[in-house]
Image (cartoon, rainbow, N blue to C red; front, side, top):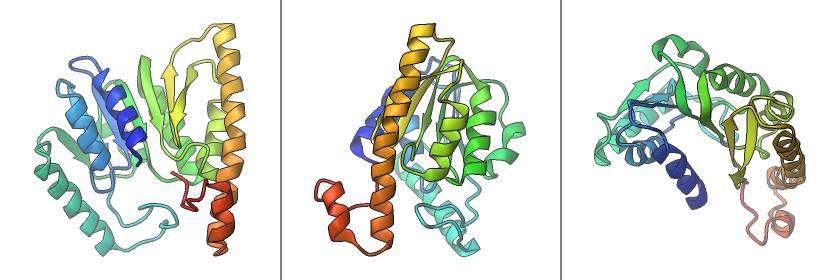
Length: 229
């Protein structure tokens, strides 16, 4: 997570009305959950959905071990306690698609940073996105960076009549649930299509890094040559 992405999370969470609900999918070790809790002290509920099973822990970390998951779980709660927000976060230790029954009602804000493969990403956007109330916000991490996440966005959001694309901070995209007028919808579609150029750049950087061609990747990444976030 970059500083800009943390600021976008803060801005979105601080706009949640008193008593409103926030859910995040993919909590890992708690950094984003801490931001949400600090930014929305009057939220009715902040649910952190993460099975801490050792898999889907980050870029190129699809598979893992139970011990790694338990380590993440311990650090998650340790970090929340150190930040003084452990009592503000309800941890739902389940995969996202098995957690619907654990959270009642609609959401004012949804933050998705779960599994990046197309199937799970599409299910999170479709099923959890449907639970966001009108006027609510959905933030999606690794947008226009992960192939699976971006394909899910193209299919479910590019031509959507319910979601308006607001913008992004690097790979953190912001959508608002609304019924945009025709002109706003056209702009939303155009803005998302334009992001595909940035997506192509990110995929190229990842391919070069995997191929151990970091000096070449730097040419596309303003001299950084880092995994895109």
